[in-house]
Length: 80
Image 1: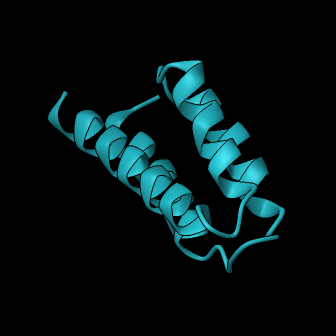
Image 2: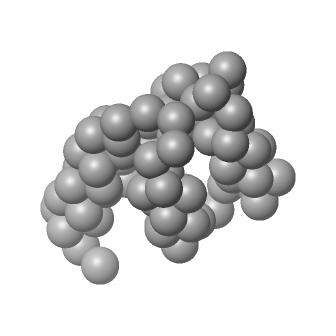
Image 3: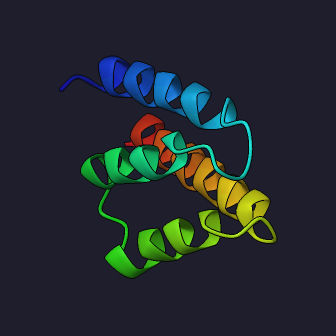
C-alpha cells in the first residue's frame, strides 16, 4: 500500500476513534480489533485499551490512548 493511501486510511480511522461517544459505545471494541490489523503494537497493549474501555472510570483514558497510538502510527508512516 502506498504511503499516501496508508495515511489516508489511518486518518479516516482516527476520525472514527475521535467520534466514539462514551462508555458503552460498542464501536470502541471493534475499533481496537480493527486497529490490531494496522499495527505491530504488542497484543497486551491493545488488550489493556480494551480492558480500559470496559469501565466508565477508565473509558476516557482508553480513548485517549487509542488516539495517541493511531497518531503515532500516522507519524511513523509519514516519516518512513
